[in-house]
Amino acid sequence: MSKPVYGVIKFGDKRQFGPEVPFAASQVLYANSGRFVYNNSGVWTACANGANNVQGFTEFIGTTSSTSGGTKAAVDQSCDVWYEMPVYKTTAFTQANLDSYIGKSCDLYVSTYQYADVQSTTTDFVFKIMGGSVAHQTIYVTIRPEIQATGGVPDIAGVA
Image 1 (cartoon, rainbow, N blue to C red):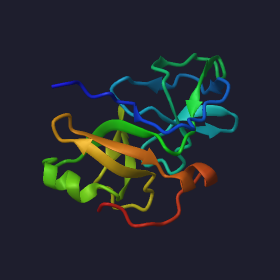
Image 2 (tube, rainbow, N blue to C red):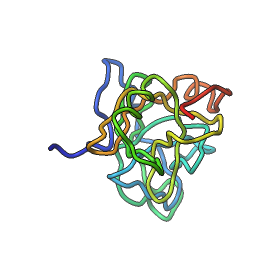
Image 3 (cartoon, rainbow, N blue to C red):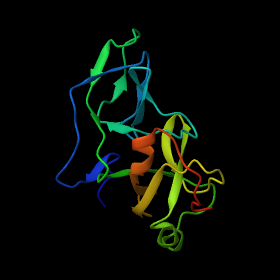
Image 4 (tube, rainbow, N blue to C red):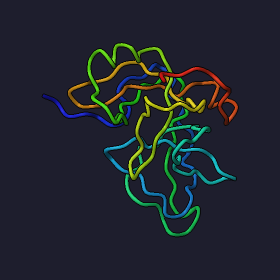
């Protein structure tokens, strides 16, 4: 069985990478995680638990400089990219679960790593579920374009 990608798995022809941008100090971005970020007053910051303003994804892995702006990296702000990320679910993640989630929205959960939270009961649903892998315990998501455009989440119904 192949290993999960934990990052970009599918994209259209309009990926939107701008110039490298400054990152906030001491941001930790793990390889086996989502690496979703947002612009926080001019420096890009890793999204925290329950984030409602996911604005992009970085391929940067590691810890940014202890000086704000000391690390620069590219941020993908495309709307047509699929990302693979670990699923957060406290009960069994089965094929039946996955099939019922496709096309719905989910939240971001962070506990060291960034996860797709398919159990969230809030309205901060930042991702649309496109598929997944039960074998890898991962979900394939896109960032909802209305979140990237507004920097916030309108109230909608999600998986839960």
